[in-house]
Image 1 (cartoon, rainbow, N blue to C red):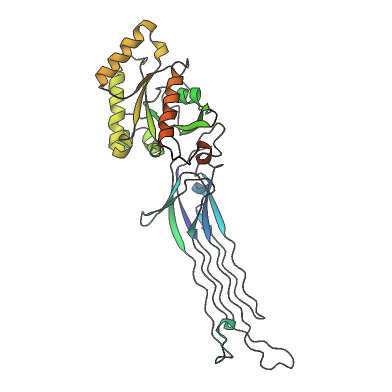
Image 2 (spheres, one colour):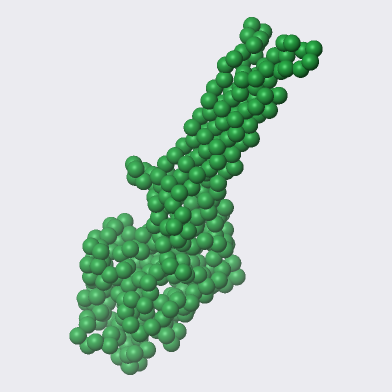
Length: 356
């Protein structure tokens, strides 16, 4: 399934039905009085967060959503029927903007959250509504009120605790497959990952967090080069970034330090707030380095990179050094969660292999 994380749609709520002017007419009742009913309310449009959805692809092709109008009032004290509401189901993490003004209207951050997108118009009043002791035969009525119509821009930012970033072919997909239940496509060529992947990492009973893997970044990503810049927004809700570096590239002319600095530069150019997030260094593919050279290679990288934060030397393929990384990441995420918030409450429904 093609991944879509942006869409623009038009929504229009239903108009309210018009009121009715009518009088009771029966045998032997010459002056029956008014009995024109009110019009029905127009249908409203709601947005609801659904954990079973993980892309906005439905709204790439269904761009127009119109609710039904309310029925007009009728005689014999009959009120018009209200128009049916429309519920637009969207993935958890969707942000809704007004496409014309650019204003952020709301975010769907919890499963089942429902927000009113466009309110249906109220029905008009029939002449029954205007009856009084001084106005026994009212001939007034009002038309229905129009429903709201607007153009909306939908943007999906996945909800994940930990995000992976790095150059293409740094081993991010192998890492997320080794520590979580995600099963992304893994190959030995760059840009294998074409869309974000989500996986749940189980540390222990009722101890888990969600990790996100996005396509690799390259130099110039903040200006549109490569694929990763299109998906950096999915890391903006994370509590921790894991910068995955290929410590043993196949090409001897490639310097891992230069690549790592390029990633940091692009991250800062894209969003300073994202650059300021807690970031740990994950030096991957140590299984490609002789055992007696690993410690010296890691120290040399840290010294040249001038890194003072946490460093983890791992092999995602051989699954070496992953337990300390996973446990440290969970402790960091757990310390930043709200006391009343559990992973199951926040990420209910993300339980199997998930390709967002």
